[in-house]
Each structure stands twice: as structure tokens, then as C-alpha cells.
Length: 365
Ligand SMILES: O=C(O)CCC(=O)C(=O)O
Image (tube, rainbow, N blue to C red; front, side, top):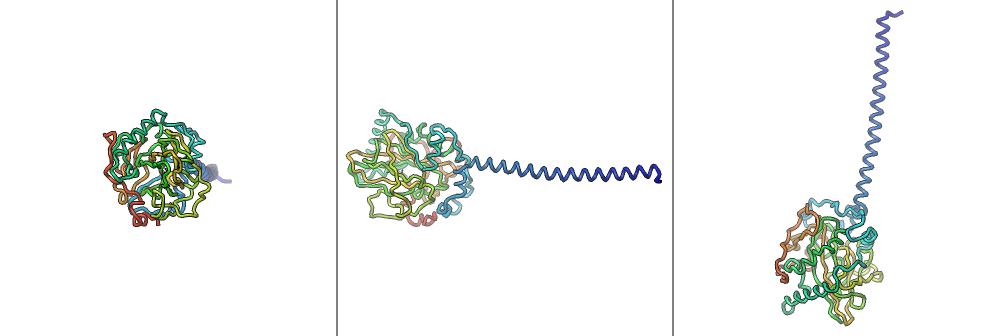
């Protein structure tokens, strides 16, 4: 029979090893529970990220094939990250309902919005346009009135109109800038057209997060050659454009045929003072104006602050922050014009003017 002390030691040893086993078990259970908790939280976090980025966010990462092929000038677009502003989550915006935002993202354009300017203001707009036209030199075309928001306060104020900016904010997110403006005017019975194209092909900017506001200076419809868009074509990626000089189009870079359904195009009819908005990748153009009525629109270009211009193509690119914060500071900032009507002598350069070499450098061909 073991002595009492030996018995106690034995009991103690048994108790101790039982305690050790119990602790080990608890430890292992803790690790398993912790792993499950980690996996659970990680998945929740990833889901939240997915919801936050939504379709627009996914599109930024999983860009269509030709977009992905677009090679910028080395070093030009480094440090570019996906902005939270283009979240793709649609909540009631400042001006656009959830449905209108979803329509825009699905189709690449929006119309049917309340007028931004009333009849009296539209008269003022046209008076201002006449002042600008007087600044053209003999032989110059209205195409020369380009980016004059940098020199004419009249145009700058239109581009910075709060109602217009509210609409753009609902599309581009809280941080965006103005950088472009130009007129598309077709006199009555004018044979000139705007060939089918994607805006983004013309612009040495990246990533492709820009929108154009088309402001009607008079009523536009099928009769006086309103702009036409191919709904949904902004999802096709960047399509092939060819240079054509033998054309009625005011643009010389036009989409090669067979890449889109022209017969599915829709006319963006507007009353004077109304706007439409279109995506930088949507296929669009306009026919000749066979009517007795003039047709005038001002296009205004806005981009998310993440968008960077290749200054080796357009050294004159200037940005004007419209809303939010420009944390990226990718581009030069313009000065607000002091004169009401004034020409801009700096000539901006698009890919069209920069030539085939620039197209190659940007990876467009
Ligand atoms: O007004 C038009 O016919 C064409 C406008 C256009 O091409 C544009 O906004 O990029």
C-alpha cells in the first residue's frame, strides 16, 4: 500500500496531467474558434468592399480588353488608385434618383431632366454665344471656341452652374473637375455631320471616368440633327477608330464600321435650357441638319479627380475643381477668368490633332 504522501503525489500528478490536457484542449478549441471568427470577419469585410465598389468599381479593375491594352506614356499614370467616389452604389442623389443613376450606368446616357435654364436665361445664353462668335477671326470656325471657359467668365459660370454640377456629382461622385468645353453648331441646311466616335479616344486622359454635359441652346430633335447615341455601347470597351479626311464630319477620327449597331441609336432630343449627360465611352454622333432651324449645343467635360492627362499630348490641360477635394493633384490647375468674353490663345491638343504617333504612344493603334 503506498504511503499517504506518495499517494498524494500520484494524485497530484494525475490531476496535473488532466489539467494540462484540459488546457491544451481549450487552447486548440480557441485556435479553431479564432480561425472561424477570422474567416467570418474577413468575408464580411470583403462583402462590404464589394458592395461599396459595386459594378462601377468592378469595372475599374476588370476593364474591357481594349481599355486594358491602352498603354499610357511610361510614368504618366503611376500611383493611380481606384477612387471611392465612383462607388457604383446608387442612393438618391442631389438631382438624380436611384433609377436615373442606374439607367445612366446601364445605358451610358441620361435625358428627360428638368430644364436647367428658363426661357429668359436661354435668351441670355444665346446673347453670350453671339458675343463669343464676334471674337472669331475671319476664316475661323466655331470649333475654335474651345476650352474658352478658361478665358471667358460667361462660359466658366455656365460650366460651374450648381444645378449642372449636382447632376454630374450624382454620376461621377463627390470629387470631380471641369476641363473641357466646346460648341457644336449646325446652321440650317448644313451638310456637316459628327461622325460616330467615342470621346475617350480623343482624350489623352486615364482612367476613363469622365462625363459630358450637352446643354441645348435651342430646341434639338431629329429634324435639326440632335445628337444620337448607341445605348449600352459604353460597355464595349475602346473601339477601333480610323482617320478620314474625305468626310462630311467635323471630326476626322471616326469609328470603323461593323463594331456597333447604328440602327439601335437613339436621338437625344432636348428643349432649350435642358441638358443630357453621356459617358466618355458611349458611341455617338449626329447627322446633317436638313431643317430650317439652327442647332446649337455646348458640351462641357468633367472628370473624376483621379483622372490624369498625358501632358506630353496636351500640355495645356487645366483643371477646375467643381466639387470635393483633389487628393491626387495629378494635373495643372487653371486660373478663373476675369473677363466676361475673351479668346483663349493657348491651343489645346486632342489625340485627333496630336496625330498617329500620339495614338501609337497611347497604345490606341
Ligand atoms: O453635338 C454633336 O453632334 C456631337 C457632340 C459630341 O460629339 C460630343 O459631345 O462629344
